[in-house]
Image (cartoon, rainbow, N blue to C red; front, side):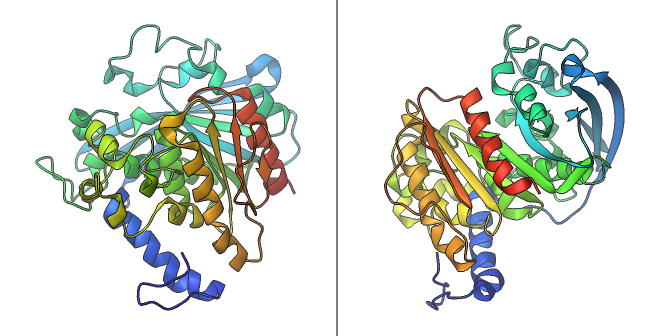
Length: 380
């Protein structure tokens, strides 16, 4: 991490921030996630519903329609926000995408279904109200003084190669429906960009602590969360849950899901330059600890599940620990160990890590750890 491309050793924060960090960011954009356009497209926000007695009176829910416009087309997305009613002043916010629509994260009847459901072939069960409520511990977060903001990731880029034309990417002036340039962003890059647009909205709200944004992502959204956090320094805490290959796990271990497997199964996630490293991970000019290190001097937390070998828990732990070198430049404390912790014994310093029992999922235990970590770094 601390050697420039010309062989110079990085020994100061100034060298890191002015030279090495931009080098790594450019490498990751060019060879893995694709370049994020500098062009700004129009985004309109419209509050479509407010419930001041949500979650049994403990919160106010807000539902906000985002309308993205460009090249004569529009894409709509729906943000669901829960804000604690028992609050004094501004509050920190946990931001994250959901998978099957806002209505699946809660049993509350007034929560509207996400617009992108029309594109996805979910079963009636998979898009049912409350289907994934176990992944969204709203009441615990609200009780500890956090707001939570979620949007269905398919609203930003429907998760199918055939639906690229329906994504926000198609609104940009350089979009080519006929093909993808080797370093062009695809779904992961667009999802990361979408997280920043949620941040744009939140930091303008009177109830938001703009220095208290935490970005949480699970699985493929854990990958996107890390990429978003690398680019957008407004996220004071970035949390990766079971993100695996292309997320927190070291690619060069080639364990579990590999570059070959992920680029074959999900050809629309990464820029096409990344395909060159299928079964050739040793040629990568970086590894995922570089991505994690780009959060410094902000805070990053990585979590794994014991039964989720596909995501390579040991590789996720190692990558988080290898980023310690950059945290040390800032006089901060990383994991501080090369010994993977036992299950349910989290490490919480300026970076953090835990492994829990169970499968590829987001659980109440995960939320407790994430909120504990945020309490250390976002509560002032």
